[in-house]
Length: 386
Image 1 (cartoon, rainbow, N blue to C red):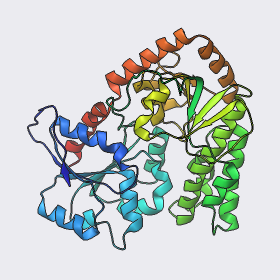
Image 2 (cartoon, rainbow, N blue to C red; image 1 turned 90 degrees about the vertical axis):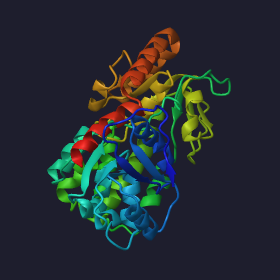
Image 3 (cartoon, rainbow, N blue to C red; image 1 turned 90 degrees about the horizontal axis):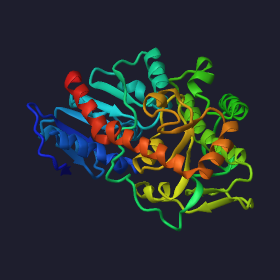
Image 4 (cartoon, one colour; image 1 turned 135 degrees about the horizontal axis):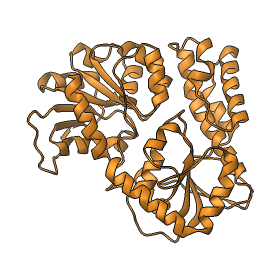
């Protein structure tokens, strides 16, 4: 357990004692949000080791917490690994959940925490928020990616080993290999529903929202729908990345990731993956940094990481993104893969133009999109919700 240090000396008239809990491999990426809450003047206590449920229970009983701030992945882990109801409900401690993942994938678990103590869910996509409200969830709030730290993602010198025209930081696997991971013990109803989504993805060459595509014919609270949603997230990511690579034809693309896909195409250069906190050297060494978004409307966290590094982000058009980064001035968007080759050709040929846009995106990030900005917004909500 650690108490997050307040580095700013800021004080609040009524600081909150906030509990947060490590539960998964990606939780450490969210740590900048906890630091930002502490820097605002809240007392943030982070359980940085995985404990048995009784260990968490004893801690909550011993300390007088006002609220727990849980990552969606942490809440998911508790709900899927426990043999009893969620312990914070038993202890009567209010909590909120902050999502980097699409919570529609987890309705089978979340149906058990539609309770007064689950005071709020913070989600990065306005369409997903509408879907959750249609399903009867209350206190659903829009919060774009909230954990990007300008001390981690920042401008750095270009690295000769990474310098290239076009880079794509992504895990690239073959579609068949990815499909085989997720469809064990499925029945034909599940396979048929999933295949319908994949067919739409192939036809549109864009992300297909599972809830909108097949939700009407499914029990969306069922385990089978959650399994389909989870599989479609990963299968579509693999397919979309394959489509992007094909759309670029013979243009050279440097792919940095941990995927298992191989290719004999000379223009596709595969590199080892990077630690999540060591991506800025790649972004700053690439004329164009590509991104694809596995959400219906959201701005992906990769765009924020790239702009925080003062590098050019080229990403797929998503409606929520447009109010966060201005098209063609702060970030470059493509509405279809047909547009992408021309965009890549232009900004690799005119690096001065790319630098102007990268600078504008960087300034927008620093002015509005850091973890500190997001946690200041969350702090206001917490006072209202508890």
